[in-house]
Image (cartoon, rainbow, N blue to C red; front, side):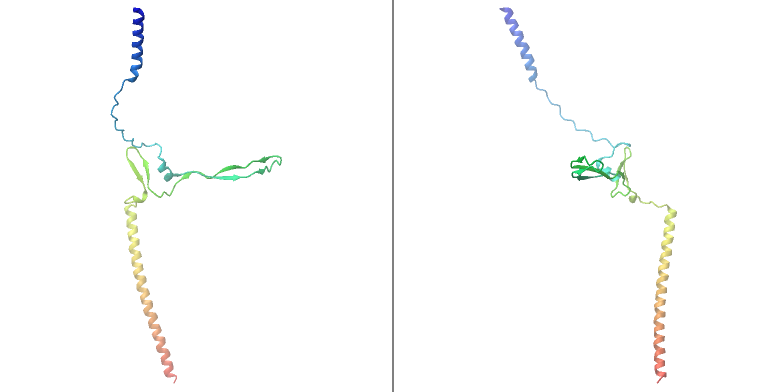
Length: 172
């Protein structure tokens, strides 16, 4: 009887340990703040928001076609189905509407030529300034000549008027 009791106690002890171990509570560790996302590295994929700014995707169109008899074999009829056609292939976007963020390593640069402060070399700026001065002088001369032509036209009209008045007086 003693053997049965010790056997029973050992079996019950093993069961208690087996089922009791599943109920142990574990303390949850406090959540650690996630690290910020890594900085884009040169040669990595662009995010979906910037892909359309750099390259346009291909255009596909679906054309539903009804039943028809095969033109090469009148004994064959095709059931209605959809035909997909590639209208335009993928290509580079050479005229973007907004600046595009391009990953260049640890620093993000905006590739927008319109925001460059001084895209022209100094020599070219000097030539543009000279052309602007010449244009201003030509406009001034044009206005002076237009005023002189108007003055001469008025004097000519006055002379013709006097000439016609002299003929009418002299003819009487």
